[in-house]
Length: 397
Image (tube, rainbow, N blue to C red; front, top):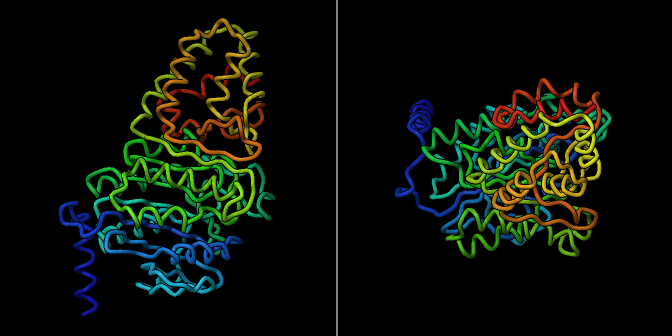
């Protein structure tokens, strides 16, 4: 019987997900929760927040939960309960030992979740440490862990790179036969144009933070309760709801007070931002050195984040205007601002991030940082699309 079941399951995976017309529910929320690290206790907290809401007749809440404390990886169908201290949702599968830093594990979970819990719409989220498009500056960051991109697994020393994350989303999208409705990173520093570029063709809406996230991460109760109450909510509205509830929770709400950022992005508007940055790149590449120094000054004056080379794109454009660089056509800046305004569905910030507009871009301020990461940067889809690295090489001196 086990062999027959396994063959049937593999057949289901090979033919892809159920069509929307055959799906029983409106939404399936798939959370890849990697607690194989020092964030483990917050994973239990967040699942308990989900259990305050629970799955419904129209919404599936599904988690792949890795926990150092549990010593294994479990797949849960989250059910509503009133116990705020213990996870009581049924374990659908106990996976034993799984490398949560392996992109294949993420892809297997998504395909399993879609097959087991078909719906008209899918929200995929990855929960763990994150470092944007690249590795941390030094191994001493985050208590001695060398964070790389997203989903660091202490047990294996592996993590999922930005390119691998994009590959997973692209593979799932092709298998599914359409775009994933929403992808979100419950992780630090992932709200970047470079990350968005890797999933531009596979995801409709993307949610991420430009800066560090506190350990408590997303406020799952406040975010998911409105979806369960109104499962007809669109992907755009759901991404914006998460953005708003996240900022609210750290502005005297359920998570207290902290300096945070969060934004949602319409990846259908990616090309407009790409095209605007292509024009900005061309302007920089053809200007004299004196003007390029002003571009670097604009980058240094713009809002940056815990990694100083992660710069808010909108504020960078604002600072370019303030520098009055006549070699850059003002229409190029206007076009970029307009494109960014359409790309960012909603940006919400608290505390010290008032100048943030929603999307970060890589701008190292010195040649050492530029040279350290330039080769890797050139492999990203964003740089293939915009050749932004060529502009960086001109004004980062």
